[in-house]
Image (tube, rainbow over all chains, first blue to last red; front, top):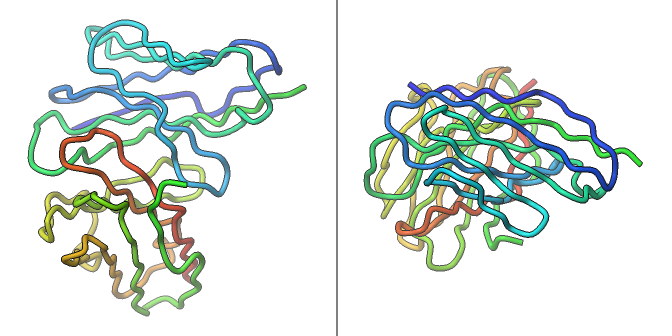
Length: 114
Length: 112
């Protein structure tokens, strides 16, 4: 089975940096996804990590350590519009036809305050 | 905008009724996945359709069923609705070689 754990809520100040952690247990590993979901809207793709290390994409970076079963999403220069839920997700350990069937964590609700 | 559309936007049903939700995938995508998202939770995988065949199923009972059509649009059917079925139902389309899934805006189902 697969299990994902991430904090329920976080609060940070506009302009600051925030790190959202995710730990996971999977049988096999095919990468880790981060999605952003604003209230009442669909999740949107942020990042996909397969190899260890940090991947930077503008204000957002994602880190993966496969040996520790750990990932984090780093958001820099926080803006009010970054207030949203951030979802960590993993696909099944086995590959198959079709695309990934994701197991999501419960999400971390980030509130950015002035 | 992802190009994935879902209908209806909102739906209210009574316990025991049946419901059909629809999804049109992004152009060129032949894989559609359905997820259920309860309030305050992450999405839970229901099932996936690839080239009109069910290609995997999550931990949902058989009263959750689906179809995919030759144009790759898809339907999710839920029979004998229960109160716990109240949730946001999301469909996501993807290409078989791509890892990114594009989610539609969802259908908010309320069962009373």
